Amino acid sequence: MGSSKEEKEREAENRERAKKIKRLMNEVSKYLQNETATIEGKTKEKSIKYFSGGALVDTLMSSSWADANDDLHLETRFDAIEFCTGLLSNEFFIALKLKSKKRVTDGESSKPKKSKKPLKFDVIIDAGEFLDSPEQFYMWKYSPMGIWAYIIGGGLLLGVIAMALVPVWPGEAQIAFQYITNGSGVIVGVFFALLIVRLILFVLVWAFSKGIYHFWLLPNINEDKLGIIETFKPLYSLDNYYEEKEKKEHRKKRREAREREGISGSEVTSATEDKKTI
Image (cartoon, one colour):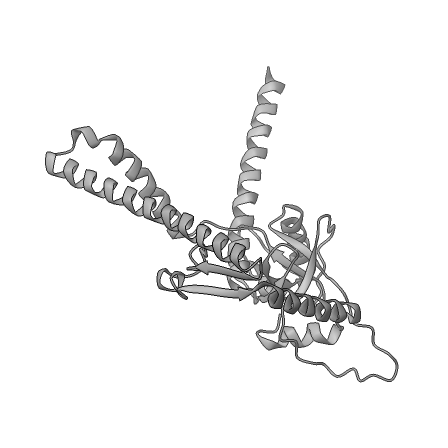
């Protein structure tokens, strides 16, 4: 009985310690994500913001956790590296690998050139140990919930409760809710009708031009990244399919030629200096 009680107490202590470590990691990660300088880059799937391992350790060593702190005390840079390794193993951020490096011949100049385009990376699944290096890059995976997430979530919850209580609303409120519901239905119906009309117009122009011209009414209507006004601009677009295809093939050949040449290490340095040194 005594040993069983001790085991339960030990398990409770371990659970409490694990919760405390998790809270600490969340707190430190949120701070590092806000304070560590990042640069825009790209992976195969999406645009990203990356940072170097050296910049992350610098930020951590300049924080209050590097001083006397009851929860976390980082006496040396090695302590900070160990903590960052824990963040990496718990996937608060993930490691990146630069896709290619430019081959430099003996006769070429090694002066850094400014890189205006974002650098491209591959994601490293099993990175292992965290590297305190300005040439090792990472991207955040940890995404803390902001105040707006709580506000929107609370608003949705209140909205669901309010709709469930519609039968007990006053008569005027029920009539207003009915008008709002009907109006929303009309707006949705008009939107879907517009999608059908633009598809019909596209097919007609495509058929009569034998596939040469592509006509879209309100071409940006489905772009969710644009504002309301920008969604309705331009009114229409008319493109020559073969000209656009030739342009795409030309751009593809230029991109492949650049990728065969690769990216020099000096371009990484210059891209880093374009914004904030990381």
